[in-house]
Length: 125
Image (cartoon, rainbow, N blue to C red; front, side, top):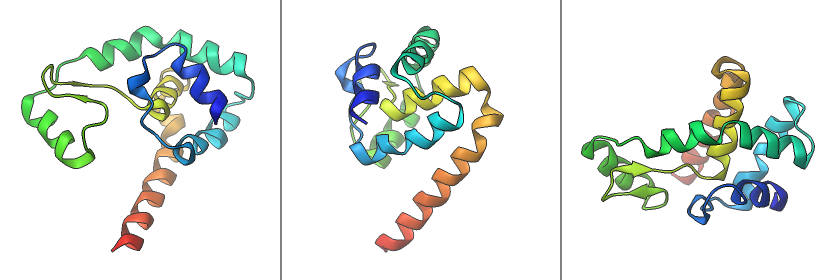
């Protein structure tokens, strides 16, 4: 987990570091499923898609979408004045994997994560 954080933050600013270690630990099975098991492989994956990720982050959102994100998820990763947002470490890694392997191949992992989030929400109520 610390290794993933270190690799990603060596290429992106510290503002991306707003996830917990438990959230980053969720990336390990996903990376392993795509045979990314070494630091070098992760670093190369992140380097290959750096420009695309930065371009996606710099895209301006409508003001309403910015305010909706702010209301739903807190202030982490949102620039209210520029109407932009940035991904957390897990988002950077997952979107790099989507660019590399295609969205369809990542879909089962999205479904597993969504189901886990729904269970957590039900447990809190």
